[in-house]
Length: 302
Image (tube, rainbow, N blue to C red; front, side, top):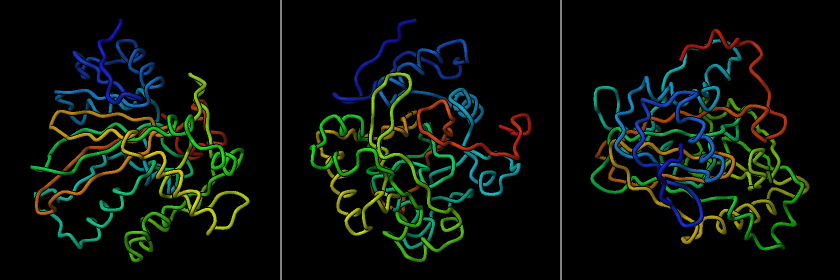
C-alpha cells in the first residue's frame, strides 16, 4: 500500500492521512509505517481515538515497551502506560512549584528520551488527551539534518567519540533537589557513540541530549561548550517543527535522530499526554545495547 503523506517539516517528518491506528497490525499497515519512520524520523497521525489498549498494541509493534521500574529492578514489574501530565487522577492540577511540575519543566530542555538508561529508547509514541487553551507545544529538531550541515570544526571534536549521559545532569539545570531525588539519581551515567547510523537507511545522526555532561577525551568544562554549540546549531528555527496539540493527535519520533522539548503553558490548566517509549534492541543501530536478564518475554504484561 502506498500511503498518502504530506511533509511535517521541509527537512524531516511526514503526516499520514486516512489511517485508523486501531487497524494497524504487524502485517497490515505497520510495515509501511515503519518504513516511513526509518526514512523520515517522525510521523503525525490526526483524529485518532487511540485508546490505551490501541496505544500499547501499536507501540509493541516497534519493539519492547520501556518499563523503567522493571529496568531499575531487573525483574518483573507490570507495565503501566506513562502520562506526561500536571494533573492527578482526580483532576487536581499540580502547583507550579510542585516537584512534579519541575520535572515537566525539565522536559522543556532539548533532549532525547532515555539516553541515561542502560537501555535507551528507539521511539516515543505520544498521544494528546487533554490540551491547554494555549501553549504546551512539543518541538522537534532533526540531528540527522544537523549532522549533515554541522560545521567541520565542531564535527572533528565529536567524531569517533563517546558522549557521557546522566539524568542528574539535565535535572540539576532545573532544580538541585529534583536531581537528587531517588527517581533521578538511581540511574548511573551511561556512555554512547556520539554519532550513530540507522541500519535501515544508512543515515547518520548525532546522538545527543540535555543529559550529556562530557565528551570522551575532553574536560567537563570544554565538553559543556561543545554540547551547547551542537544543540544550539541543531535547534535553529529553520530546523524546528513546533506541534500545537489537538486531542486525537498521535505523534511518533525516532529517538536516534530527533531532539525534542515541551513548551510552557499556564500551569493552572491541565495538560496530559500519554507517552510510551519503545526500547532499543541490538538490531536498531546503537552498539552495546544490553538485555534485561531476569525478564522473560512471556512474563511481560502489556
